[in-house]
Image (cartoon, helix red, strand yellow):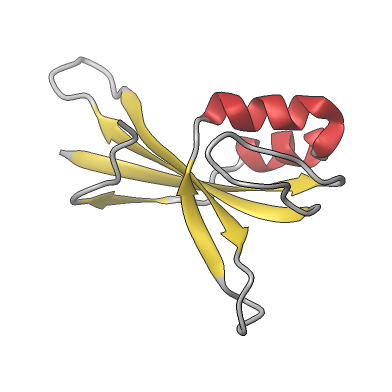
Length: 110
């Protein structure tokens, strides 16, 4: 099965919360990655989302430590809609995917 990975950046101007993440996340730029599987046997390419993850900072001795957390894209959109994100930048980033195609196993969101 062929898997497509798309990455975007979402900028939050204010602290925000997401389901599945304890506590309030600070404002800043967050990398969001979505894996999609190609649905075979159709006359045109169709992809099904299998996982969406966000990279969040982790308190540690290393300033650049991040944790990859599986999230529901609807929760991310809700956090953006609450005024926490720079929606114009999120829309611009979503319009130009920076991902690549790959094959192999993926993270299952179930």
